[in-house]
Structure formats: structure tokens, C-alpha cells
Length: 103
Image (cartoon, rainbow, N blue to C red; front, side, top):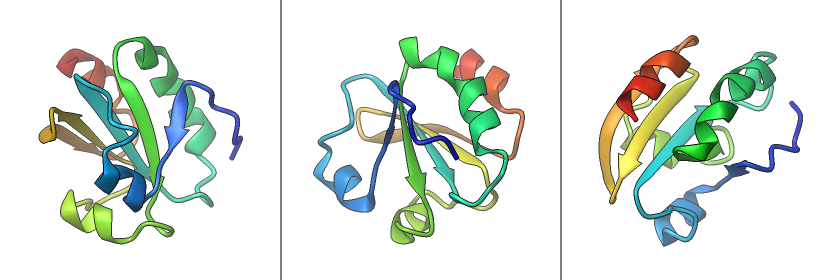
């Protein structure tokens, strides 16, 4: 996976608990596994949304408790959060258009 996604930030459970990376308004959390060969393609599909929503990504292997909190059932998994509350969640590939409609 390409690590240089300037408009998409990698976060950990501690970052999320501290709230330091959540911006006012909407935040999209992308749950993934580093070894997934589709990550770069999925990130490219989301990149155009970064002007409208703060995109954060969390490796579920490095941060195993947060996915349980958000009931992550399938990867990739996306959660749209606003003001600390979950608005929507999506599971599986090909969700960029559904996410865009929710924004």
C-alpha cells in the first residue's frame, strides 16, 4: 500500500479516543487491513471526497478495539461520523458513490 496519501490520515485507536484528528463536521473513517491489495484503488476512489469530508483510515490489525465499537462486519468498512455520532456505515467495495450521496 502506498503510504503517501497527504489528504487522508492514518489514525490509531488512541488518536480517535483523544479526538485530536476529528474535525468539526463530517469525518469518514475507512477501516482496512494493510495487506489488502485493493487498498490503493479504494483510496483513489475516496480521494475526490477529501474536499468535502475529513478522511481517516484505521488498520484493524493495529487497532482491534475500535472496529468492535463501530460493528465492523466486512472489509473494507466505512463509517461517516459527525459531531461524535455515527450517521451512516457501509461495508464492501464500490461504496464511493453511496458515500458521496450521504455527504
